[in-house]
Image (cartoon, rainbow, N blue to C red; front, side):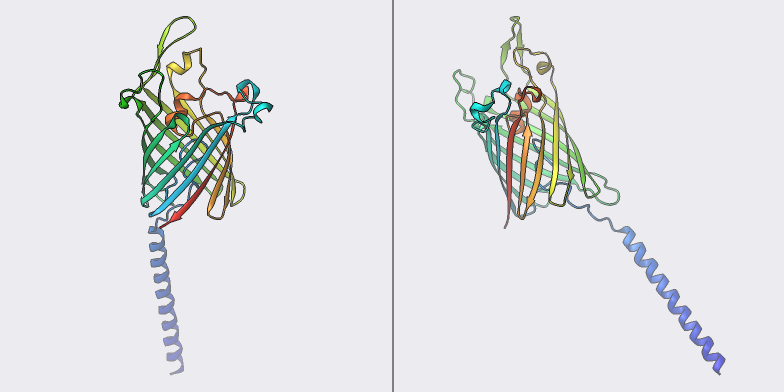
Length: 303
């Protein structure tokens, strides 16, 4: 009888261990099928000049003020007499972006540069996940116009004031510290001007500007990071036209998160803040001191 009880107890223990192993196997199999989203790739919707894949959350309103001072170097119009560009405002932009869903937002903004008024839409097609989705993909588009008055008749037809911008942003977060993105872009302007160079040769700007942007961020701490971006524009006109030298926009900056605010201190050669302005019109050179100090403050309200 005693031996029978021992055998029975061993059988019960063996059954329980087998059941536990089966349950653990089931849980592990279920866990392996889960595909979690990767944490936020960026803290805000823009780096220095380039848009990021970051979106406003559903029913959230992002209020943003961006300021771009004048050039620092004397060769580019700066120097001690205007406090190295701090007396000058090349561009100031106020914008509002609202999240309709987690993956769709719309926005409006107004810039000092060209008195530009723009409306934008941004849609997240794909979010980076731990498995099977190594990238985040976002599409962006805007339409812009200006009420600016011209000395000639160029704006008599209001269609001449319109420009359109579209961009695909592809980003990836590599661990907790580093994020990177690239962004093929297309800008179309209804009106471009004909000019004459130093040799008397007529030249006409392109209606279409195709660009490729690159951007990155490296987090030094959980709240402080280094940001950088660069936009290369494929333009025969900008490569060959000599009375004015055009340059690719390049920017670096520091990102600081303080509570509900994300604060950027930036340096770039681009005078304009919106792509419709800075892609075709960047004429300042880093090598000549054409560096413009800037900052932006973002505040998100949740409704």
